[in-house]
Length: 331
Image (cartoon, rainbow, N blue to C red; front, side):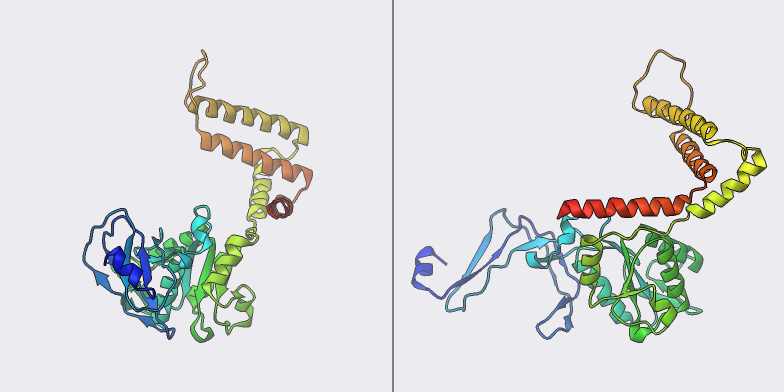
């Protein structure tokens, strides 16, 4: 359509599709006007220019301009206003794990998985919801058929450790044994658990925060105070107290421990210096940064035992103060 024609048609509207090259569309389910999810569509490969494509249609009602951008977490192009603030967050703040019943309401599980991706979340586990087979009540996703349930569950728990939050899919409030284990594990790791459905078990429900949608969970995690994990330091302190007795360290004073700790810090400094190639004319020997850090840390634990401190509580209390100070500075 020419510019002259455009001038003669006042009731024109335009759709601007801004992209340089479309390598292919493979969209997940998208919501329709009635709230249901419609089937994904696909288009053949198409190459375009860097310029915006402007399509003019005569006698149409004016509509808003639609800017299209590609979500980094999706293989689809979505409107800009559907991209949440999580896309501008540092990596890791919107990593999420999806848990719950993989047998009941598989379609609902798939839609939640897609909804989390649409919000810009990276779903660490499961990577996709494509059930392949079921053996003794355990559901294997596509690509997992040759793995053992133990290996799959261990990988899921490792993903929970890395996640910013866990979303629990509990159709009609049902939570199975595996999901219950995962809720408890997430709580022990300080990973918040959210669910849209109220959980039937009153004890389990104490560890789950009910929200209206995954977007509310994301806003709470990214925009609010990040939960401080439950500390495993008391167990480590009890262990090292037994070790100190066994190895004859139980009579050491705080001054003894401090001097030994400073010596280990010096060895760590030497290791870092070697790694950063700040070489001097001195004999070199092999060093291990991980071992030196471990030595320093163990002396910190030992010092806490000598002073009668609960290191886990001290770390948690101090981090609560640090977090409150940080949030005040952001306002």
